Amino acid sequence: MRAEGVLDFLFPPRCGGCGARGDWFCGDCRAQARPAPRRVCRGCARVSAVDTCLGCLSHGLGADSLVAWFVLDGPVREAIHRLKYGDRPRLAVNLAFPILLIGGLGAILQPTVGRVTGLNAVTLAFTGVLAASLFQSAAAGMISIVEDRENDFSRELFVAPVSRLTLVTGKVAGETLVAFCQGVFIVVFAVAFGVRMSPGQLAALLAPCLACCLLGGAFGLATIAALPNQRSAMQIFQFLIIPQYVLGGVLVPLRGVPFYLDVLAHLMPMRYVVELTRAAFYAGTPGYRQVVSGSPLLDAAVTGVLFVILMIAGTAVFGYRERTR
Image 1 (cartoon, rainbow, N blue to C red):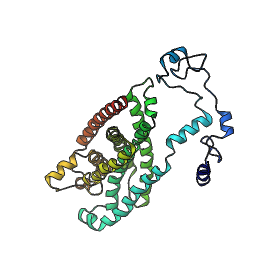
Image 2: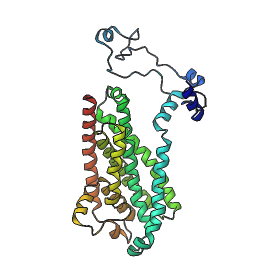
Image 3: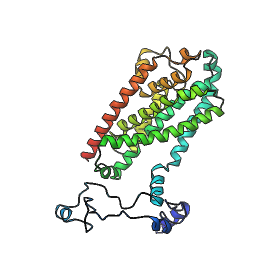
Image 4: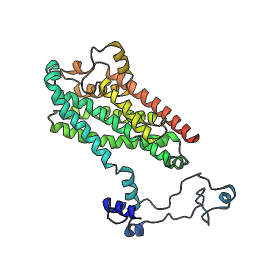
């Protein structure tokens, strides 16, 4: 109890419903929480006059369905929302890293890359970093499914009457929304650093940015589903992401590289969304040929095919690991 008191002093509990200090769910919010209107068996979720029906008592408690104990509104809804989307450190890091790359490395590359290409190196870095940041953010967000698996939450979730593909698609969609919101702030900071863009260029970025998020989420699912625990996921994930920053041409487009590096570059999923984003931003400008080396239609097709393959493979692997635990 003494250790708990020290932790409560250093990190005071806050109510998940209203944010007040003192308790994780204060008395006022508990009073406002409305229990679900019907009584159901806690084993099978069928309507029952008792907590555990005769079927579950005779066969042992199962996990055939999920039970909602409270109505999803008011403080209960707010607490669940904060639990799911209150990852402030991750948001801060994912915003700070691309800003440093755009403002720092972009300015450093201006005397060399900018002089050779005749383009603004900060703007060039912005288009690549924006795509890479959205890809990485959505992929990193999928690490939480490993934590869910370790806490047995995913096993409870997979008894819901929907397909596993639907569940993981919802997870990818959620991480896409989080990454997309971060992308808005990256664009705002890029403008503050002197990146000039017309309303047409801004609108042209919407579809490629969405593709970055979706492909990143699918890549994260397929990668992390095969890993045994969260520690391994954190270590191996960085090993898979960092090379893509180099071989994906995030800061500088790759041209005239050796054949083996060109082959490796084309194996990097991030490369295709970076190229797609640059093609959309520089379309119709004199620098288009200098920054875009491939066909945007081919990049879009490869992105779509990779998304489908990674989603199906990731769902199958994750489902298999859940069944064989």
